Length: 71
Ligand code: SF4
Ligand code: SF4
Image 1 (cartoon, helix red, strand yellow):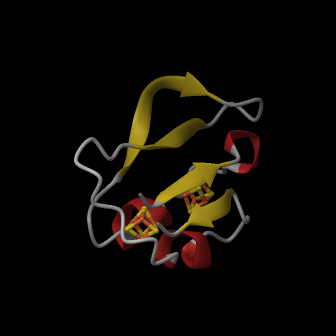
Image 2 (tube, rainbow, N blue to C red):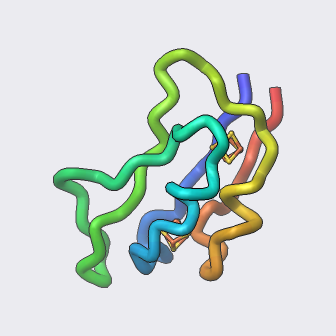
Image 3 (tube, rainbow, N blue to C red):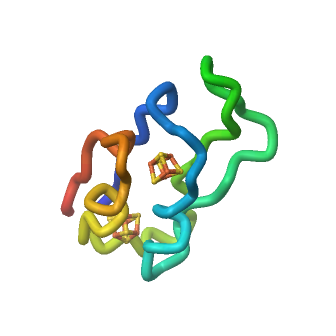
């Protein structure tokens, strides 16, 4: 199964990754704030739809999507 890892403390809350994911698997957290005070993003893939395409990681300007596993 493909999935991503978000390095939450690097996230600047621009949400470009949210718009970029073709499967809409990245959501803004309702309750999680990082040490910069930003509402971070969360990978939410209950139906295992992630393509491992890395479009989210490529789009992130702060390299906060630190790993993409293709499975
Ligand atoms: S693109 Fe990067 S910095 Fe922007 S919200 Fe997504 S993980 Fe955070
Ligand atoms: S790897 Fe592709 S499908 Fe998976 S979360 Fe990132 S943009 Fe979405």
